[in-house]
Image (tube, rainbow over all chains, first blue to last red; front, side):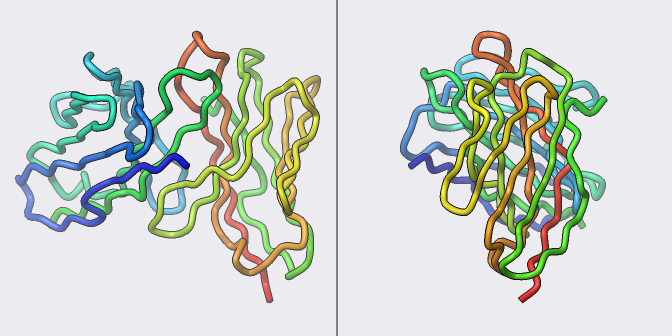
Length: 117
Length: 114
């Protein structure tokens, strides 16, 4: 299998707090990880693509200073929402692709429900 | 601009019936077409995937039909069950070496009535 673990599953915190979300590939190495944001009853919105050992590539309109991404190893990527505000409340999901073979699917974590009060 | 168009937005099917979800794309560089199933509060899970060199792929009750010339692909769920009630997303990605990004459809909310 290809298991991606995302932690925490739910965060409730006060406005102005920074929140770190971890994404781990448990049984495979992931050269590339992706971070998505999903609003209720909507599709996945790609925020950034994270490659191990290099800077993340952010999609247009996503503030890189607001959403800090670190991909320090082949099994771990982190997303830090800095100085979070209520408008940052959302469902954040990571995914990972196996290193090597082409046409590999993205394997998703179970998401993090972020609620900023 | 939506790279992958998905329909219908929602679908209600009787238990035992066939659920059909359709997707269309324009970019001929797309080379890999997965379908994902998502339950509320969970991340999407890979259901089945196809490459354009085959016209159909079947795994259990789930079948992908692929029409390369029409640039369309669809998911058929045979003998639909209440446990299949979820949101389904189609996706497309370009050939290796031309990009890693997956382009997702807008999703179909499937409800299977007992």
